[in-house]
Amino acid sequence: MTHIGVLTAGGDCPGLNAAIRGVVARAVADGAEVSGIADGWAGLMDGRVRQLSRDDVRGILTRGGTILGTSRTDPFEHGDGLTSLRPVLEETGMDRVVVIGGDGSLRTAARLGDEGLPVVGVPKTIDNDIEGTDISFGFDTAVQIVTDAIDRLTTTAEAHNRIMVVEVMGRHSGWIAIHAGLAGGAEAILVPERGYDLDELAARIVTRHRSGRDYSIVIVAEGVPGPSGDMVLAGLDLTGFERLGGVSNLIAAELEARTGYETRVMILGHLQRGGTPTAFDRVLATRMGIRAAEAALAGDSGVMVACRGQEITLVPLSTAVALPRTVPESRLAEVDWFLA
Ligand code: F6P
Image (tube, rainbow, N blue to C red; front, top):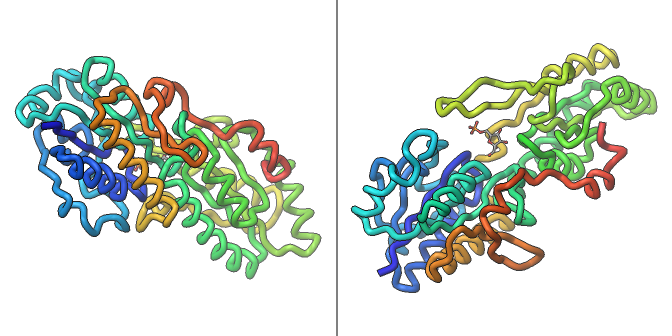
């Protein structure tokens, strides 16, 4: 009998449970056995695997997080690659794996695929930075959360004639910054794809306030370099992964000094990844999960499920993980006057 393993790896995002549910429901309907692997690749290395029935995934569609748990453990960095996974694969009879992950986890999946493990990838990330798919689930929810936050921050900023610098996730790309900045009516958006000029931005803000607008919202993607040109790190996590965060404090200090307007900072951080997914993300994640199960059932390997236009299709994992998907020049040009 076909035996599909499913895991979630890397940072979580809203929609993971919807995708797991899609995989399980579709595969079980075809008579396949499905096992849930705990905490990403870690569970496949140390044997934390449990069978998932259709009943096990009832009621999880709307839940944030992941019922399987996740981690940034990597079998190549923290083990001997496929060799570290073989004992559990053989013991359980699992003969293919659906990997729901971001760029790092999908890169690992591609490598394991090259070594002979049948793998199907599903892109997930709030950052929306995976190549090969028009959109990843998690992104729509994050944009909605940031937009709600901007709406609230606007009224308090306006009451005090302040600048509010709002830092959002986006390690390599400004997708969240641009979408939420447009939806929330931000005065300026700083993204990793472009440089920025603080003198020019400060002058714009002063003109704006003098003309009667009593607040300015400045959106900063966490991956934007600081005023000195260096990336601002918040440290390393326990797997050695570089944590970003805090660049907005440096930018805010410069803006306050240049404009003379009080400036406050809001780093939205993990709030952007928590809670229930939007209807859009529930649908996208479910469709991707179903398509991944179909690919795994058909014996496809080295592929990633992708959304192209309105269709859910398959693309080679190798093209999907080659480079992060940044905001293209055409999209930046559309909002050129907002970019600082
Ligand atoms: O999922 C990607 C991401 O959201 C990045 O934007 C951010 O830098 C990172 O995850 C934070 O991850 P962690 O949960 O390890 O702090």
